[in-house]
Amino acid sequence: MPRDLDLRHVISPAVRDLIELANLGDFDRTREQINHLRGCTRPINLVGHTTTRDHTTGETIRSYSTSDEPTGRLLTTCGNRRASRCPTCSRLYAADTYHLIRAGLSGGKNVPETIRTHPRVFLTLTAPSFGPVHNRPTATDGKPQPCRCGTRHPDSAPELGTPLSPKTYDYTGAVLWNAHASALWARFTLNLRRTLAANFGITQKDMNAALRISFAKVAEYQQRGLVHFHAVIRFDGPDGHTSPPPAWVSADHLLRAIKPALKRTTLTVVSDTVGDREIGWGKRFKVDEITALGDGELTDKAVAGYIAKYATKSAEDSGTVDRSLVCRTCSGRGTVGGRIRELCPDCEGTRQAEPLRDLPVHQHVRQMIRTAWDLGGLPEFADLKLCKWAHMLGFRGHFSTKSRAYSTTLGALRDVRRAWRLAQADAARIRAGHSVPAPDTVLVTESSWAYLASGYRPGEELLANQTRHDINQAQRRKHEGLEPA
Image 1 (cartoon, rainbow, N blue to C red):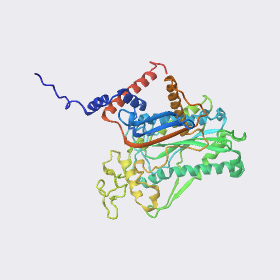
Image 2 (image 1 turned 90 degrees about the vertical axis):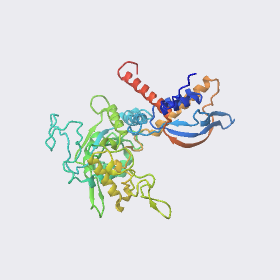
Image 3 (image 1 turned 90 degrees about the horizontal axis):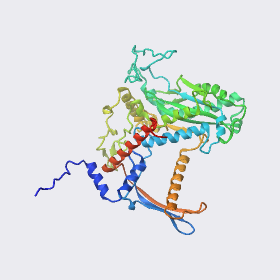
Image 4 (image 1 turned 120 degrees about the horizontal axis):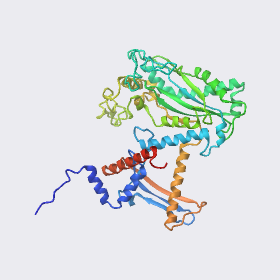
């Protein structure tokens, strides 16, 4: 009688886990959870329950518990905005940023359409030079010119952005500039208000009573490893986007005030070790008026798309890594233990999660990381936490920020999606023959949730890969016009 073959050793662990998932029961629910994530790279695993009841009658309106799930847990999206970590969640973040910026230009999302008539400009600010670098200069006719090294570099040349003379390049100044870039922006917005008040011939108090300056900006890394900012700056009434600015202000006032405000914006960094430094903006900046209609390059839609594109990027676009270099075991202290301390077994006292010399980066980027790490060990720079942000080349600010009254908020956009999902759940209850609470019903929700882990099981990863493939194929067919939008 022939013996059954044992094929477990030739079946991959992922396939075996997929078979186990199918044997758990209700495999469709497992697949539904993963499809709902739309290919999230590293989902959050939660355990717990939530119950919503009618406060008056005590009737249970909605109830959910992970104990009813086939796998005993709930998968939710990681929500990471960085495209290098999770393309799926970053696309959602970029879409939210696009609608946030667009609402402040064209209206919508509870922002009146009269916002189109408010004067506004698009501003790009750059960092100063810390030494000549390889680049691709262009002439006035748009033709590429030779670099200072005498070579015409192609777009993909790895040496672009690297110093012509690494020995004389001011790495300390570059890292300190990145570390203070956000503070420099805050100082600029303050000086812009002062300059405008002086140009109007009124006090800042009187100007604040008549109008408000709103903005939204994103940070982008240049190839040389320094951040620069793209920003929308707009005149509003004293109540923000809900009120029109005075008739006597125009975009020309912004265009005339920005340059002197930039010149007077500086910060002084005091250090006995590396010497005092005065930090300011680079000489190159660009500011243009944003047009409400499609009669120019800087339209509402173009600016919103441009800013949203950079909202999901990070320092890795300049060639660095997208992870912290501080040892997690010792939290960067180099030692572990209580009263009696010993060297950290993972970093052996170096405080580094991985040796800086072994990082898979260009020498220029490695030197900026090493400089940030060395400066982070100086007591005068302790508040900058440069070791923690060494992988960001010293920059520790938010990539996307806005003033309070610019437009809607990311939280409000997420609340709209949450309300839509609840409406879909209520519609499903009606189709199932259940009643839904009246709009004025007082609801009480009791919840208890705990973090379990991050990521997929091996079999779930196969399903997630299939989901990503299906989504990418659908998007490709849509862009090629093979199916309706």
